Image 1 (cartoon, one colour):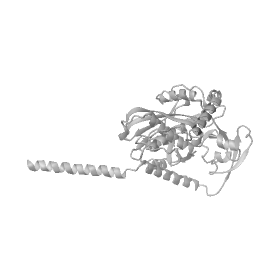
Image 2 (image 1 turned 90 degrees about the horizontal axis):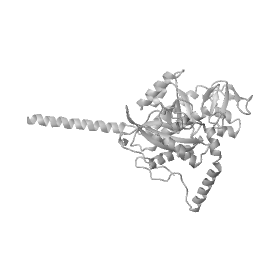
Image 3 (image 1 turned 180 degrees about the vertical axis):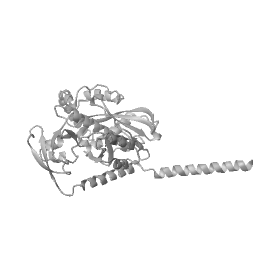
Image 4 (image 1 turned 90 degrees about the vertical axis):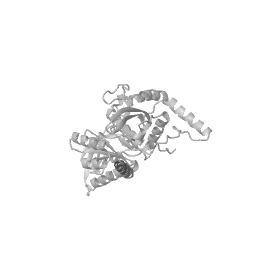
Length: 381
């Protein structure tokens, strides 16, 4: 009997030791979020270089331009190297800074995606008479930026698994990105200070004016990029199956690589007012507790008076559902400009008054002044 008890005790200690060593090894081998971003960016860059090497000799293509004052204009560009942005640089500074996306032979096209054939091209901005496609690309881009903010705002001790960014219409009142946070954060309830810290992170990315670089790749490349994300691998397989060519499109913004169901706008600098408005729980899923992070933004060309913004923000705080979008904003960004115009003088007066008060106190006035939570990276001023 004594021998049996001693044997049982020894067995328990061996099992505990083995379990401890397994957990320790998993902790050591688990890459940090920064390492994951570095690996994904490296694979993206390697594939980008391979594709560019497919055009060793410069071949010329004809690009027929369309749009106000551009009809009949033909540009001779480089096949596989020139992009719609390259074409815009042959026009005016306005076309370079104001354009958000392009239309190539009737297909919505990223400004940074290379042109591979002779084609017709038109540049589009938020000032278009019918900005529906531009607005949708902007909403999609804001959701992508939101995912990047969530992935980079937490310390490396906490893993952040990005799920999907549901394709919501502008009329839903908010864009969103679904995430699974580290299990250590299951009890975390975001406060207003935490939301302001996340918003500040987004503003920093916007001020950096980062480019959204597109890259169309075969599924094996995308699976290598997201080798550490089971959910993203499943999303790659699903998108590849739905694509006529069987490929998927990746985007890189800084060192952050993402998967997108459609074109994004040219750069983060096209975003202006941007706030993370809410984090809602979606319940437990295969990877853990799923949350829906929501936000609201307006493009650089449009600005809202603070009273209008407060009403839009109040709507954006309510949980949106990708299966039942709520028609709240029943007008486009272009129509919003009509409302904003009557407030623009007051808006700039407030900004000027705030600036003067700031100088009077001899200190910078910042939008978000706060102490970040322990699990968030401290935002640089």
